[in-house]
Each structure stands twice: as C-alpha cells, then as structure tokens.
Image (cartoon, rainbow over all chains, first blue to last red; front, side, top):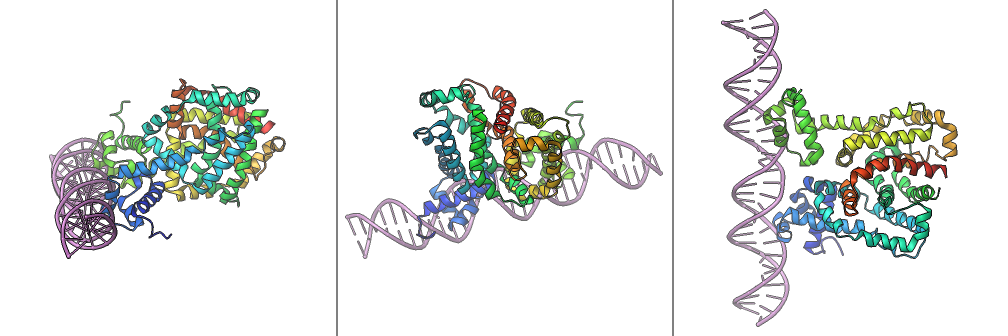
Amino acid sequence: MTETDKQTEERIFDAATEVFIEKGMDGARMQDIADRAGINKALLHYYYRTKDHLFNAVYEMIAGQMFKKFGPVLDENLTLEQKIRFFLREHITFLQKNPKLPSFILNEIHRNPDRIRKLIQRIDINKLWNTLESQHREELKRYNITKENLPQFMTTIAGMSVFPFAAKPIIASIMEKMGYNFDDYIEHRKEYAADFIINAIIK
Amino acid sequence: MTETDKQTEERIFDAATEVFIEKGMDGARMQDIADRAGINKALLHYYYRTKDHLFNAVYEMIAGQMFKKFGPVLDENLTLEQKIRFFLREHITFLQKNPKLPSFILNEIHRNPDRIRKLIQRIDINKLWNTLESQHREELKRYNITKENLPQFMTTIAGMSVFPFAAKPIIASIMEKMGYNFDDYIEHRKEYAADFIINAIIK
DNA sequence: TTTATCTTTGACCATCTGGTTAAACTATAT
DNA sequence: ATATAGTTTAACCAGATGGTCAAAGATAAA
C-alpha cells in the first residue's frame, strides 16, 4: 500500500502527526500539514474542523502510546528487579523508534497542564500501589521503597529513559565531540540505566 | 527601585524573558511583551530590531545561568561524593527558583539544535576529563567511572535534577492525587537523588 | 536659546494564518 | 439515467502578527 492509496483522513492524520511533533502546536501550520498530505487546506478542515481538533486527535494517540508502556509491566510474572530491567529495555526501545515524542509531550503538558491533570485524576493510585505491594511486599521492604517515596523512585526510572531523548540535541553534540555516537549511547543506556537503578536500591 | 523606575531596555528584557519562558518562541507575541513592559510595540523594535534578536538575547542569558552551575563544582576542594551532593543541592535549589527553565531550554534546543551544537563544539572535553581524572583518579576507578561511560553518568545526574521540572505538570498532578505536594517532593529530591546516585556507584 | 541626538508614539502596512463558501466532481443506490 | 450523499477544490475573508515610518518629546551640549 503506497502513500497515495491511503484514505484521505489517514493521510491527513499522519501528516499532522509529523508536523505537530516537529514544530509543536504553535509552530505547526495548517498549510504545511495540507501540503504534506497532498491535499487542499479546505479538505483538511472538512475532516478535522479546527486546528485544535486535529491537534487533540494527534495528541491523544501519542500520549496513549507513550503511557500504555507503563501498565503491562505490572502484570508480568517477574521479580521487581526483572520488571525494572524489562520496562527500561522496552521503553527505551520504543523511544529509539520515536525519539521526538518526549519533547513533544513535555512541551504540550506545559502549554496545557489541565489536560494531563484531568487524565491523571482518573487513575486509581491506591489500587496501583496495593497491586504493587501484594506482588512485591518483600522486595519493596528490602529495597526501602514505600508509598511515600514511590514518586521519587518512579520519576527516577522514567527520567532515566526519557531525559536522554528530551535533551538529545545536547547529548548528541557532546557524543559527537567525544567521537562517540548518540545511537550507541542509547543502546548502551538500556543496560546502564537498569544496572544503575538496581545497584542503587540493593545497596 | 520600582518596576517603573527601571530603564526601558531592562523592562523590555524582563518582560520578554517572562513571555518567552511562558509561551516559547512560537507562542510569544511581540504585542504581549510590549504590553507587559508598559510600552509601545514600535519602541520594542527600536531596542531589539526583530523578535529573533530579542529571543536570542533572552536565550543567551538563560542558557548561561543554566549551564554555569555545572562548572564551579569542579573547582571546589571536595571528594567526588561531596561534589555530587553539592551539585544536586545547588542545581535543584536553582531550579526551585526557576522551575520553567528546563522546559524552555529543552524546547529551544529542539527548535534550533544548531545553536547548542555550536556552543558545545567550543568546549574542550578532553581537558575537562583530564581535570576530573587528576582530581579523583582513585574514586573514578573505585566507582567504575570511565571516560567512555562518563556521558551515561553525567546525563543520569542531570536528569535527576532536570527531569522533575521538565515533567512538572505530570508529577505535580500525581502528587496532588496522592495528597502530597510537588514542592515537598522537590525539597526531598535534593537528598534522595544524591543518596540514590551514591548508592548506585558505591555498590 | 538653539542645535543635535536619543526616545517614544500613533498610525500604518504587507504578509500570514486559521477558517469559510459555493461550486464542481465522484460514487453509489434507485 | 437520475437523484442523493459524500468528497475535493479554488477563491476568498477577517483578524492577527511582525515590522516600519514620520513626527513629536525629551535631553543635553553649544
């Protein structure tokens, strides 16, 4: 199936995704999206009434992809240590294929903090913690992970995989200067990050 | 000295800093900046010829503030462990007072990666590594920090302090939902991050 | 006081931008 | 074949936006 065979709506959506990720909501131009989709600007408004509608559609999809990676890891029948390794490997691999998503999302949550607030208010955090505790009571105690410091721990893990992509232009420049390469740095990070975290909590 | 006593150029610069940090380059409006500075839009162009000029001036200042924190820590006469604690305390305290800087910078380096690339090409990384090694040869060996994995280690530290602010709307929502509070989370992070890193490398 | 230089302003402009409209085209069902 | 509904287009519009300009004020030197 070639690009031109795709249905118009899908072509628009794909083009919009590209442009919004590249330029952000404010920097994106409807004309640019129409051009990339190979259609007229009016047709764009025919399928998605406004720029906001189109952006929301794209954002929902991307945010969904980004956060759904956090869920399934809890269901696997693994030790906590294995889950940490599993998550970091999976999440960094996902970001390898979608390296611009972190800056897109990080940017959007600042432009419109209320959207993410409402989304998070829907999560039942107590239930999540209870699930985690029932599965790993011993390990959590041994690693000194409590309900109180769980946010510290979780954001540390998330930062380990997300930050390198959010700061990619800086890190890539440094790697280049040192004669190394950003892709190798990322590949290596899957293991480095996991080892680092395991070491920190085992102590 | 009240706001109105300030010289025009300074008032413009301060207003522009506010607006650019809040909205980013694309989202910022010259009219908005002029209004906040309490002046005419034409006067704005009199002092800073174009939006680009004005943005560059603001960016230089902010990037300077952000990165100069990384330097002096090397000069202090401290153990490596003390330096790590010192840096995280200082840097997180700085970000507490300027919580929107991370997303501003992270956003700008993606909008214009070339600027940061040129800036980093000017740094002498070999010299930096030699300095570090001459001061902490034993510790680096003991902690298994090599020239090759230094970027992994440095980005881990940077991420520890920067990521929570870059993802603040998410983290603040989660803390709120759990009945905690983002400011306490940050205050606690100064110690948590340092302990976490020290534990990870001591193993 | 006059002159020259630096500030500040209101009015204005060209261009860009998101969005609309009416008409033309296409496919499908009757 | 014709009516109907869905799709696509060219032309257009109102408002926003970055930027300009000529003239008026302010300041200080001569």
